[in-house]
Amino acid sequence: MMLTINVLGQYFLEEPIMSNQNFFQNLFSFQMPDFTAMRDAFSKNMQLITSANQVAVEFAQNSTRRNAEIIQKNTHKGFECARDAMSSRSPEELHTLQSQYVANVVESSCNQAKEMMEIGTKAAMEVVDMFKDAGQCTQHQTCQTKKTGK
Image (cartoon, rainbow, N blue to C red; front, side):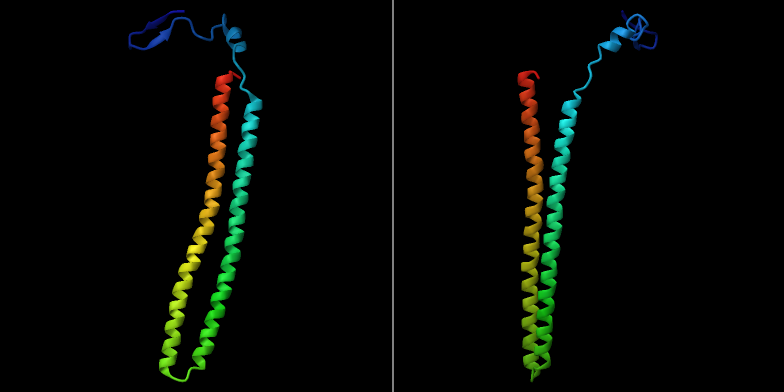
């Protein structure tokens, strides 16, 4: 087999790689991939995705439950404020009630938003840690495989 250059400057082999003479030699020299390792890696990845999905579903359930509690609490406060406003005797008392209600709404909204962000951040960090641990485990296994030659 000899490498030559044609008129256009392209390299080519004078004898084709898959000629009749070496076809079967090249056919049987092909190394099959390690299907067991591929199956194990696929299984680990599916377990990781399943765990991440479970964390996401738990986050969705917790945030939905907490949002329902927040809506119920805020609605109750709104009705209490309306009841107090109806029973107020003077415009000054009504103005004071409205001011207190608005201040409470703003404060509770900020606290509730902070709480929801903490719940979401906690869930996101759990998922990130799962993928990070899986990546480190895979990298460690790859390094071990290279060291042992298996």
